[in-house]
Each structure stands twice: as C-alpha cells, then as structure tokens.
Amino acid sequence: MQNNSKVSFENTANAFAYKNDTQLKKAHFLFSSMGYQWLVNIGTRITPWAIKVKLPIKGIIRKTIFEQFVGGETLEQTAKVADKLEEFHVQVILDYGVEGGDYGEEEKDHSCSQFISVINYAATQANIPFMSVKVTGIARFALLEKMDGLMANASGTLVRRYEAALEQLGADEKAEWQRVCNRMEKICSAAAAKKVGVLIDAEETWIQDPVDALTMLMMDQYNKTTAVLYNTAQLYRHDRYQFLCDCYEAAEQRNFILGIKIVRGAYMEKERERAAAMNYPSPIQPDKETCDRDYNRAVEFCLAHVERIATIVASHNEQSNLLAAGLLHEKGLPHNHPHVHFSQLYGMSDHITFNLAKEGYSVSKYLPFGPIEDVVPYLMRRAQENSSVSGQTGRELALIKKELKRRGV
Image 1: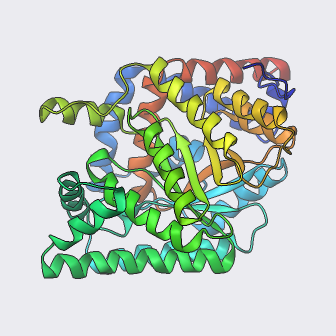
Image 2 (image 1 turned 180 degrees about the vertical axis):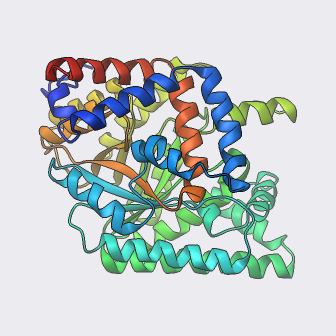
C-alpha cells in the first residue's frame, strides 16, 4: 500500500542525534566487526565459555557489544540511558536479562521478585510504559517442554489442550507448575496495579504452547479494560498468522483486549537444526518473502481490529514500519494511538526509531539490563543476528557512515 504518513527513515541527523562523535565511531567499529561471519562465529563460541570460567574479559565486553546493545548492569545505570532516550521522545521497554537455565526454585522466585522490582521502577518513569518477561526465567525449561509435548497430543483449543496436559502431570509437577502460575499472577497483579504493560517474550517452538496458554489465561483476567499483558507472535513461524487470528477470536468470545507484540523471530537457525535432527517438519517459513508477507498481513489484521487488539510493531524492517504508519494515517488515527506502538532493539535501527519519534509516533527501544554474565545469551543473539540477517549490518554501517560524513568526522 502507498505510505502517506510523511515519515521518512533517511534522516541520519535525527537517527543519531543522541550519540556523540566518539559513540558513533565505536558503533561503526562494532558493526564493521560483525560483518565478518568468521569473527562472529569464533566470538559467540568463546565468549560464553570465557565468562563461565571467569577469564578477565568483562571489561572488553562492557566497552564494546554490551555498551551498544544493553542499558547497563543495574537499573541505576540503565536509567541514564532511558533519560537520554526521553530527550528525543523515545520510550523504553525494560528487559531484565535473565533467561533459560534450569535454576532452582529459589532462583526462580528471585527472578520473579526482580521482574516486580522492574515494574515498580517503570511505574515511576513516564517514558517506560512496558517491561518484558521471559517465562524461562520463572519456569523450568524441562517442565515447559513436557507440558508442550502433552499439549501437542491433546485436541481442542489452546486452553483445552493446556488443561488436558495439566491433568497428565504427576503430583510434584502439578505443584511445580502451580508455582509458575503463582509467579506469573504476582507479576501481572503488580503490573495492573502500577499501570505498566508486561510483554511476554517468545520462546522456542517446543516450549511455546504452555507459554501461550498461560499468557492467554492471564489476558482473560487482566486485559478486560486495558492491555496489561502482551504475548509475542514470531511471524517467521508459518503457523503464527493463524495463531493471531485464533487469539483474536478468543479475545472476542471472552471479551478481553488482545495484547500482541509481532516480531519476525529470534531462533531460526536453532529451530531448523532441531527439526532436521529430529526429523519433523520445520516450523520456519520457507523463505523471507513468505515471512515478510505474513508479518505485513499481521500488521494489517491488527490495525483492522485496533479497538480489540493492542499491537506492538516490533520490527527492524522499514517497509513493515512504513505500512503500520501508513495505515494509521489512512484510518485517520493519531500517531500515538494507545493501541499501536512501535519498537526496535536498543543499538539497532536508530533511523527507524528516532524518525518515528520525530513524527509523534509512540515508539520505544527494547532496553535490556543485567550483569554481563546474565545478558551474554542476548548479546550473542545480537551478534549472530547482525551477521546473518540479510543486509542488516550493511544497512547499519551505511547509515553510520552517512552521518559521520555529514558531521565531517
């Protein structure tokens, strides 16, 4: 469709106004390095191991990839980044960088407490409307995997399959799952009371169904009048557009607002490798064109039902962002409509974020924080993404070079 919203992503003065010359040069060096696939391959293998055996590399990480993609190790450090973004009317999605790992119950309770601390902090900041949660931070991966397998063998709606799976758990596992539900309940209750949105991150396909079901049940409880809870749909999966439509039907029937963050996805290589190794059909779209088609269909669907669906267009794709902006314009809706929000990862696609903000759109940076050892998995994904996504590193570098030339440095 024709975009008539007047937003342009070509203005690098807007895109990088928040970075000084030194910061911009460091970004140039980092993205140049990530352009070398062999270097990224070595780095993503060695770094987690080096952190685990406590080699003295934290200083190097902190001054390079960490500084580019992470707000800080603590909330206090991250607040400085959030304040800088606020100067340019860019909001923040706070992400406490804990994920995965079969930690004990005590650690999962601690993660729950940390998520609630983030909610309480976000509630005091006008430009932090959302925070994100990974269910793997509060639930044992193996239990999620078992639930997913049981749900796959059940029939009916998502919630009915979830209920059938619960019945097949042993007594100890039921008690453990109830603790997961209790943690989620605490998080949602705190968020509702503080008026902070909670975004549930997507996980691997083989643990996603129980995450979807639990999120749906919580939306049914907390999203009656406003969107407190948002699920995430990864449109690089070939079944997610239909999943979005099914979620909308459930929201209509149960009379709640569907909160949905639409992304392309983060686990493509892992998903394909597992499907090949275990000899089942890949859940991933056959090609990028199909993924782009479904993503844009999802944008159109969500904005066609904007009264019932609260959408976060979380994308680094220029055309998808222009599509959403154009649809708002076409429908005569305000740029800062409460049910339409744009977001990009901190450290990437500044030309999209800051130019949307300049035109008055509701837009944020997804801003992770936490100790270096906790956010290493996130950082490794960013490095891999920027080396493997077609054109991403090249686009980032071209824009940075354009701005450095404009500044004459």
